[in-house]
Image (tube, rainbow, N blue to C red; front, side):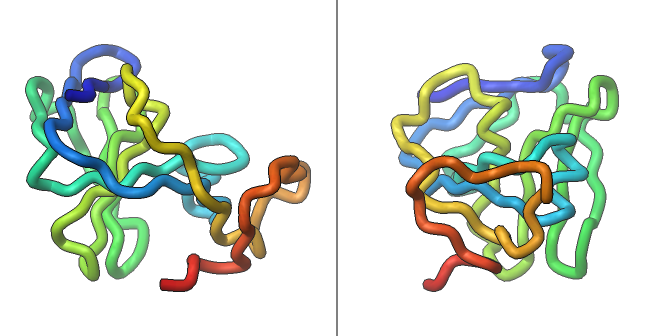
Length: 133
């Protein structure tokens, strides 16, 4: 079981089951939402994810036609996203985890819009947009 939550501790969650892949997203929306050069994202099946406290503290923002970003309305911590095209999964902000998920990001996506002041220094595959299927 994995556990995590927001900075103020008001929101807590558990993941009980397998998780999917992880990646680094450099799109301008993720950069602005997370306030950093990129976002580390972990795919989590909704069936494995459970909020254990703070549901009333969770607020959301529809950042595009098919994406909803959820975050704590007290401390502003990014928690997870959902996408209309993938209704069975969340994209979890890996920085909200307390535990090691056992997977590492496998690639960088949207590097075509990465922060100009950040240089990617690892050898992971880089995709100008989203990764190929």
